[in-house]
Length: 632
Image (cartoon, rainbow, N blue to C red; front, side, top):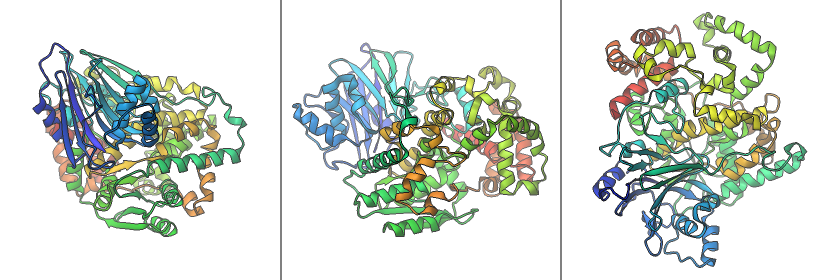
C-alpha cells in the first residue's frame, strides 16, 4: 500500500519542480513509512510513499519499464498479477522485480489503454507514457483507493492520494465548494467527483483520466450491468446452483487477497461478513490466522463474545481489547487525517482496531462492502415497507407527531427506530432509500444556511435531482427495485463513506486493508441475481446467509445486525462539550458566514439539555469547523 502524488505540466511550461513533488510526498508518509521515491522528467513528476507488501527489497517506486519510457506510481494491489506476469513473460516481456506494480507497466505496453480491464484488485495509479507524452490516472472499479486531482489555469495537473498532498502546491486554491458542503451536511460525506474545495475533484471509481499537454479527458471503464444487460435471465437460475457459485466466488476472492510477503490477519466482529472471511481463510489453509476485535466500555452491547467464539471455532491467534476512547484527543487527531469533512462516527473504532492490529500485521482482511453488495441495511427494509400505499399515507400523517413524544419514550430503542423511520417521510419519495440516510431535510437546510451561503449555493434541492446523484438515479430503471437501491449505495455511500473511512483510518495506522467482498467479479455476480434473493421479504442478505450455512453456525448468520455504538451524543454533552461550545459559538458561526447562528444555537441548547438528540447535525458542524481550522 502506498501514497502517490505528482505534477504534469504542458510542454510549454517550466521543468517540474522536484523539491515540490518531494514535499507533496512527505504529507503522505503515514501511507507509506517504508520508502519514498520521486521521478522528475521535464514535464512530469511522480512521487510515491511505500508500505512494502510484495517484493520488499525490489519494489521501490516510481518504477519504469526496461528503457525508461514508461513510469508508474502505484497505490494498492493487483491481486491477479502472478497470472498476468506469466502471460506477459510468455509474450516476451522482461521483469526486473516481483511486484504487481511492474506487471501494470508491462500490461500497458502489451495492451495499451485496454489494459485496465485485465487488472483485478484495488488501485489508484499514475502512469506516464514518455513516448506519447501522456499521463494516465486510473482508479479501481469500486473506489477502494482514493485519487484527487485539479487542473490549474495554465494547464498544469496536480494529483495525489490525499487532498493534503495537493495543497502543498502554492497555486492550488482553498475556496469552499458550496454544493459539496451542502452534500456533507445532508449525508455526512462529499460524493465524487465533488471535493469540499472548489476546482478540486475526486476521480470517480471505475474511471480513467488522460492528461496530454494541458488537456484532460475522463472516461468510465466499468459499471455494474443488470442481469439482462449481461445476457442472462437471473430468474431461471436454480437456487442450489446459485449458492454453489456464490460460495466458490467468495472463496476465490479471499484466496486472491492472501498473497503477501508480510504477515496478514483479519478484523473479526463475529458477524456474518467478517466470520465468513475468517472461515474461508481457514478453509484455504492460511496459517497462522491473526484476528483482531475491540469493544467499548460505554456501549449498549458487546460484540466481543461473538468474535471470541468465532476465533475459537477457526483456531485463530486472537487479540481483543476493551477500550475507553479518549474522545477529545481522538477527535482532534482523526479529523487531521480526513482530507474532507466527514461525519461517520465509526472512524473511531476503525482507527482503534487498525492501531491495535498494526504491531502484529501489515495487511488486514475486512468484511466491508457486504451490506452494500448483499443488502444488509435497515434502510432497504424501510424503503420496501414505505412502498406500500397505506404505509406511505400513515407515515406522512404520523411524521409530525413523533417529535412530540416525551424524552423518556424516545430513549427506548424501538421508539428510536420508529422516529427515524417516520423522519424519512419528511424527504421527497424520489430520494428512495436515501430518505433514511439524510440528516437534514430541505427545510432544515434552508433554516440552517445563512442568506449569503444560500445565494452562493443556488437552489436548495432534493438530492436525487442534483449531480452526481441524478446520473445514478437515471440508471435505476435498468434494475429491479431492490437491486436499484443497492446500486445507489454502491455508487455513492460505499465509495465516498465506507471506503473513505477504511482507507484513511487504516492508513493513519500504516495498515493495508483488503476487502474480499468487494472483488469486482463477485460484485458483478451478486448484482446479476434477482433482488428478492438479497432482500427476501424483510430478511436482509438472504442469499448470503443461506449460502454460508455450510460454513458458519446459526448465531453468526442470523443474529441482529449491530455495529459499533459510539456514544457521540454523550461525548458532545460531556468530553466534547467545551470543544463544541467553542467552535460552534455564535461569534465564530457569524464570522464564518456559512450558517445562521440562531439555528445552530438552538440545536446546541436542545441537545445539551437533553430535549432532543442533535448528535449527527452537531457533530457534522463541529467536524467542519475543526477541519476548516486545520485546512484553511
